[in-house]
Every structure is written in structure tokens, then in C-alpha cells.
Amino acid sequence: AQKITQTQPGMFVQEKEAVTLDCTYDTSDPSYGLFWYKQPSSGEMIFLIYQGSYDQQNATEGRYSLNFQKARKSANLVISASQLGDSAMYFCAMREGKGTYKYIFGTGTRLKVLA
Amino acid sequence: NAGVTQTPKFQVLKTGQSMTLQCAQDMNHEYMSWYRQDPGMGLRLIHYSVGAGITDQGEVPNGYNVSRSTTEDFPLRLLSAAPSQTSVYFCASSTDQGGDNSPLHFGNGTRLTVT
Image (cartoon, rainbow over all chains, first blue to last red; front, side, top):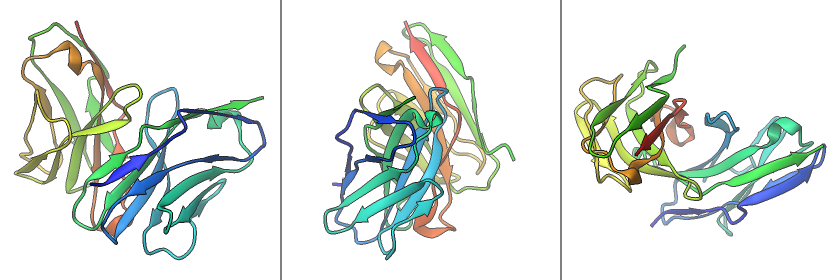
């Protein structure tokens, strides 16, 4: 069965430093998509970045990059030059294949950026 | 562009009461879903729909009903509220037109308390 694991309940990072949030996944489907979402204290879910299982290069979106290691089934989020506004809950999610429409989420990592 | 609209934002119910959480999207997405978010458990899928007239159960469907009479609307009904249903509820939609890289678009959530 498909599963997403985020093993870091909480993380601290100093402002302007980089931080890596871990995500591992389990699926038997060769076609899948991996997503990261940010949930600030205001509660909304904000889509950050996507990586497809067939993508050859790691995805990047501004200060966000996804360290995709397919053989290890990991999809870690890297935030460079952390800002105070990055303090939030971060969720890793996976969608299997095309047409299945089922997205599953990890339990999240709460990131606190220190001034 | 309104995106996904959820109402109400907050609700307090007494045990045994019924209510409907409303969800509407204006992006012509075929896929809509309901999640509940509880501390330490991430987002868990309650019900989902891949089109008008088609619904299916997710991971935690008990105590909830859904219907999808139009592409735009996907209400979630609590038939007899229980304290275990105290949670934050998110409606989300997506489309398959972008393939596997279609992220979920979330509403702003409904915080439900059952006393």
C-alpha cells in the first residue's frame, strides 16, 4: 500500500541557513507524483513544488528544491536561505499514477526559523 | 478567481446534531475530495469524487456522507456528530488535464468542534 513517512515532527533552523525536510514514500506504481505543501499558522494549504517519478532532474521553485532519490524512495524538500516567514508546517504528499486521483499525505514537519 | 470555497469557517455542534459542510470550486476540476486534519496525523482522506454522480470512500469515511450532483459542488454531511469528529476539514480539488503534476487546490478549511 502507498505510504508517506515524515520522520521529523519538528525542526529548527537559523535564519538565512538552508534546511532539509525529509520525506520517504512507498509505492509499487512506477508512475507517481510527489508534492510538498506549506501550512502557515493561518491554516491554509499552499502548494510549493512537484516532482514526477519520471523526471530526470530535481525540481526547483525559487528557494525550494526537491532532492529526489528514486532508488531510496525519498523526496526531501530543501529550503535555501531560510526566512522567518518559512516557519510553518510542511507536508509531503504523493499521487499514484494517472487517473487514480488519490493523494496521500505524511504527518508533517513543523519548521521554526530562528532570528 | 475564487478557487475552492468552503463554508463555514467555524462551527460548533452538540453530539448528535447534523450539519453539512459546503465546498464549491470554479476551476472545472473533475476531482474533489474531503480531508480531515488532526494533530500528529496529517491529512486523512474522507471521501472523494472523480466527477458528477461518482463518489468513493477514502481512508476514514465512517460518519460522513457525500454527493456530487454538479461539477462545482461537493458537500460533506455529518449525520450525527460525535466528539471524535472534532477536527479541521479541508475540501480540495484537482484535474487530470495536467497529468501527474496536478496539485490539489485547497479551500481554507472548516474548524469543527463537537461538544
